[in-house]
Amino acid sequence: MTMSPVARLGVLLTLVLGLSACGNRDITLHELRLRDDGPEEFSIVPPKPLQAPESLSVLPPPTPGGANRTDQTPEADAVAALGGDGSRVTARGPGVGAGDGALVTYASRKGVDAAIRSQLAREDLDFRRRASLFTWQVVREDRYYDAYSVMAIDPYRVMSLFRRAGVRTPAADPPGDVRDTDNRVGR
Image (cartoon, helix red, strand yellow):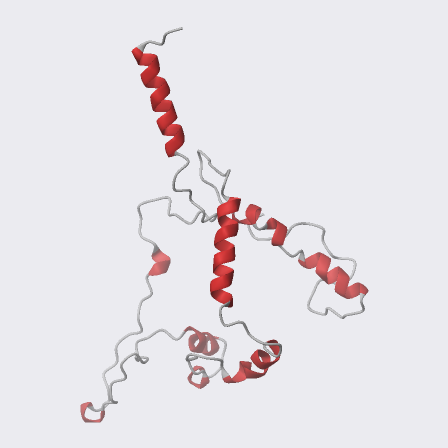
């Protein structure tokens, strides 16, 4: 059986297109691309208004890499909005905050792996590569929750286990009001 040149060209184009779909897989799992050409309004953070100093002869020394008066201070602004004194909130520098030292000490009592972030990043990249093997779609959709569903913790199941063990859970729903629904975001 012989094929016409047009049929051969059609088969060749189909093979080329089929194989090109196999290269450069998208392993991000989250569909975060903007679907329009408009601006991303959440990426624009306006600075605080400029203020003239009381005296130009008594200016503070410059602090390269430090904070400026016009920098946003979300924690202090939130404290002030809730009626507190925003000036008492100090920006956190590198390292552990003073109030978190005991927590970090307790959590690291059995040792800390210095390379844990790079190890987790490698393992997650491998997982995303495996999870994205057969996810080709015509219409893109978010696959994040499907891929990580085997690792998700059901908070109501854990709460039931704690209650059966006699642990009080005062901030949770009252006993008997535990829902069996899946309350994860995106579901």
